[in-house]
Image 1 (tube, rainbow, N blue to C red):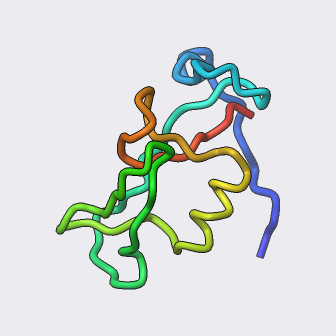
Image 2 (cartoon, one colour):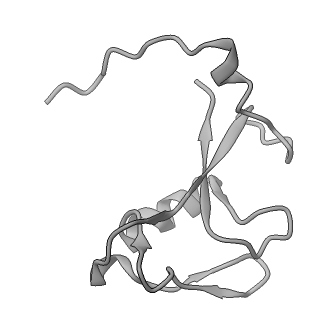
Length: 96
């Protein structure tokens, strides 16, 4: 499997979708929702927000990836829960 894909350069319009409201040292990013339109039991687990609120996927959805993968997102500082800190889980997609 090819490890590096042929990535096309982004347009100015696409770059405008990336902001840095929290002054992340990694630079501009955009929030990508962590939920997915499937129902898979292994992708339905509780996520605790920074404010202590427990979030679960809605009944007709599940999370995008496994709990271990989510914990790596958290560990890397790329988890985002909105300005209030208790919103729906997202991950920061960095501008490359």
